[in-house]
Image 1 (spheres, rainbow, N blue to C red):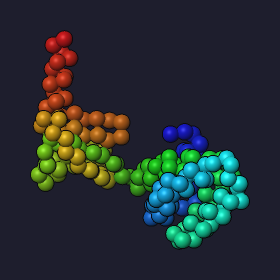
Image 2 (cartoon, helix red, strand yellow; image 1 turned 180 degrees about the vertical axis):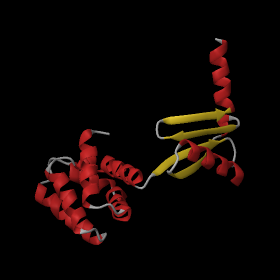
Image 3 (tube, rainbow, N blue to C red; image 1 turned 45 degrees about the vertical axis):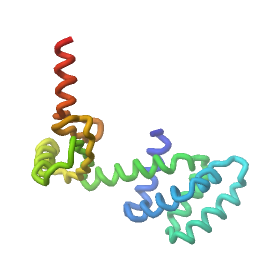
Length: 170
C-alpha cells in the first residue's frame, strides 16, 4: 500500500466515517472492472470521466462527497489508489472502534467451545478490544489451530509443531 493510498484513506475518513457509505462506494467501484480502466485511462478526457462518475454515482445513490472524492482522485491522477484507500479506511475505522480482525484456521470445522476458547485467548492478548474472528478450514494443518491477527501468528497447529521439531533436529 502506497503512502498516497494511506493519505487518500485519511481524506476519505475525514469526509465520512460511515462504513456503509464506503461499502456502497466499494460496491460501485468494483462492480464493473471497465469503470476502473476508463477512469485510469490517460486518453479519456477529464470531463468525460466526471460525466461517468456523475452518471454512475446517481444510479447507485452515492452522496455528493463521494462524487467529489472520485473526481478529485481523477483530477490528481490517483484514481488507481481507490481500492487501497478503501482498505486502509476500514483499518482506520477498526482502530477507532477498537476492533481486532483475526482469523483462526482449523483442520476441520471447530465446535462452538473451540471458537470461544480462541476468542478468550485473543481477549487476553488484546484486552479492551472487540474481537472479530473469522474461521477457516484447512486440512493441511493436520490438527490444532493457527490464529492470525494482523502480522502476528499464533501457531498451535500440528503442522506447525512438526515444522518446529524438524528445525530443532536439524
